[in-house]
Length: 457
Image (cartoon, rainbow, N blue to C red; front, top):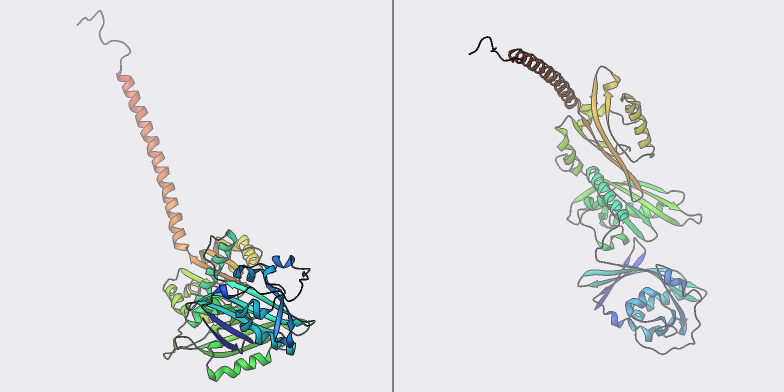
C-alpha cells in the first residue's frame, strides 16, 4: 500500500490517492475514553445518502474522540457503531488517523472548511472515490463524505433506458457539430459525450471531479483560465473566449468557450455551465470537424437532408436542405418564416407546437411551396424530434423530397385503377360472351328427341 497527495488548484481540493489498501486495517479494537451519549439524530442518519462523522478534539487537536461514524463506512469496515464510538481516533483507526490527522487539526486550528478527495485504487484501477468536507462548528469536527463506488452493470429500468437513449442522441448531435458541454453543481461535473470526442479520449470514473478541459489548456493560455476564475461573480456571471488545449495525443485544438454561473444571495456560486465548440482548422484550411465529414455524406443527395439542432440557433443542415428549398446556403436565414411556405395549416400548427415545446416530435408529409410559389411545389417527408439530455434541450431530424416518388406512386395507383377497370370490363365481356354461348348451346340442345314415331329409324 502507498499513498500520494496532490493539491488541485483549479478545484481547490486536496486529493489523496490510496493504492491497494486492506480494509481490515480500517478499524482496531480500542477502549472507550468517554461514556456514550447517544446522538439524537443517529437513526435519521441511516437514511441520509452521505456519511456524517462527528469528532471531539482532544489534546489541542492532536487527537480526536469518535462520537459517531457514518453507516457506509461502518459497513465497509464490518463493525457496529458501538464498536467505535467514544474511542480515540488514533487507537480505533490508525490508518484513517494517519490519513486525516493533519487535515482535521488544520480545520480545528483555523476554523476554515476544507475539501478532500480520497481515491482508492486496486492495481491502478479506481475502486471507490470519496469526496469529503471537514467543518468545525461549536468546537466539534464534522466530516461529511459522499462515497462513489464502481458497481457491476445491472438491468436498467425503462426510465434509465430513456435517459440512455437521449444520451445517445445528444452524442450524435455533438458529434456532428463538434460541441461539448458540462454542468457543475457543488463539487461534481456532468460532462456530455461531445467533450470526449473533442479531447480524443474515453470517459474515466474521476472525470466528475475535474475540469478536464481546463486541465488541458496549453501554458500560453493558462492566464485566460486564471482570468476566468477571477472574473466570474454575481456582477459578471458570463465568460466567452477562445482557448487552446493540447489533447492527450498532443493535438492542439481551438475551442470557442462560453461559461455561465449562478450565484445565491450571499454571492456564493451555486452552479455553472460550460459550452465548448471545436473551431480548429488544419494546415490545408479544411475543417477537421467530424460534422463536415458526416454532412458531406449527404451532400451528394439532393433529395435527403440531415437537420442537426433545427430548433436552435446552433443549427447545421446538410447540403440537401438548401437544394430542396432552392436557396443558396449563404442566403438562408434560419427562422420560423420558412414555415409559412408549407401548404398544410395543420402541419404549420404542429411545427409551432414543437418549437414551443408543447409536443416532442413531428413525423408527417407536407407540401412545400418553394419561395412561396404555389406553382413550384414539392412533397416532403419531415421528421424532427426534440429531447432533453442533462440540462439542455436538443433536436434532430430529416427532411426528404419525395415529390418524384409520390408522383410515381400516384401514376401507379392511377395505372392500377385503369387496369382494374379494364379487367372488370374484360370480365364483364367474357361473362356476356359466356352467356351468349350458353344461349346458343341452349338453342342447340333439343327439348324433345329429334326422332318421332312417324319417322322411325
